[in-house]
Length: 511
Ligand code: SF4
Image (cartoon, rainbow, N blue to C red; front, side):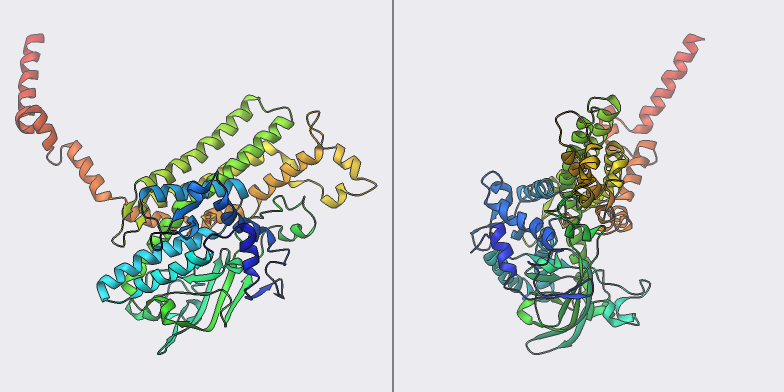
């Protein structure tokens, strides 16, 4: 099987038995746990749309390692066209789910480890890349969803990993054996962790020589012995147990269903280890992954913006103010911001380049600009969505009151808008806007794929400020302008001497 449907994916999770805890209880079946279902449905959409003839061109790809048709979420980009199709896929998926569909983190992990293992082998003569290609074949063959586990809990951030009082705040190698390694530590807020088939780990930061045991990347099945998950809470999460109305997006949920992954003396066979001590390649791996993932945000979040803009416009229409000038102006603002982010992410893909491994990478400077814009503009377009929707989005009665035999009908009638629109439909749309604009989606836009400070560091490092100073010096006349000298056919000095002489002669003539 190389491409699962959404239903196949959900069924495939039944074959795994990860150790998961949530709200103080051990969860026996991921698929049957009502709190997890929206996240599973959102991830299932990444499978289902690959079978839809209308979307196949962007949702599916041809594997460069097997020649088989595969889901694009398992494809290592082989061209600029692949990079562009990836962000188109992100926007489409955002439009279809209005939330985080999770599978991109593993995809970016696959692409980043692919390029980095190639470079490690070039320097050290290791065989990581071949190992990784074998792993990639398996991922593509089974259409697995790996979670991308990068962020460690990091303890005292002023100290290097090897200097921490509690060594397990960074995932690390505890023991090297003949047939593999024993690892221990934890990764935190990992998107889609509990409903993934596999885990791919990557270091969270640049490592130095003394941190060799922390310079680590590997992949293991999600239910490997010694791996424990603790699922995070989200805003209003238990509303999904109350019915279909109050949750706002009951089918697909809100953000990515993050979890902690705790590794307690976990054995990883060598064939699944892709970095084990090559600390001098940790920067490359971290930055390559971060670049891919930051560029995604101009796709997925813009897909979400399409939904919330549509919802806001519909609410305004149903209240009879759809054509009022300040509403049109606000909707236009939202659209312009969303399309600005989209333009950034397209540019970042079109400005991509081929790495020595043959895989294509996005433009890292522009990827960081994409994500920095997202950390601001998502808040801004969601603020406008709240403005248009009105105070109702935070004062709506519950589904239970609307269904109450005594008051239900009276409450519902308070929500009449334009004649012919069912009040329950208005309430449903307001709940969706509440879900998207009030909850966990906002801090997720801020911190997912790295916080704004991380993007600013990368933008500052890659902006070429020295080159910009040279440009300014040339225009200000502090350094030679050879183009100008060619245009005028003489040296700048000779030119300005001549100009001065002409001016003086003119002065004599005039006065
Ligand atoms: Fe994918 Fe966006 Fe979710 Fe990241 S935030 S995993 S890019 S959908």
